[in-house]
Length: 128
Image (tube, rainbow, N blue to C red):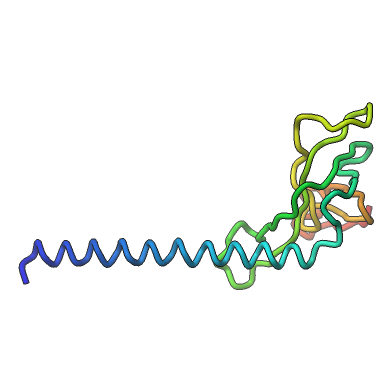
């Protein structure tokens, strides 16, 4: 087998590995989404207080992987919710509120309060 043929074979092998990796990552994302949906105590359509005094309606339940490293076996998978903001007149706004969930916020029913940097790092965890 010539060097050119070996190069072609290695390129083919790498393309196949990359396609397999993409398929496996998609399957992993589906499982993360399933886990987040099963853990989330808030239903789609629920009115939430995403910041003190600011409200929105949940349109989606999503997932968040700790450390943004989905392949780390010790990284925790959390749920988050996001949706449309509700303006002061009680109507839906154009923009969405940022995802909120237990990884970065204190959760009290349907109210969220940001933990702050110290709370997220576990340095200080005052329950709001």
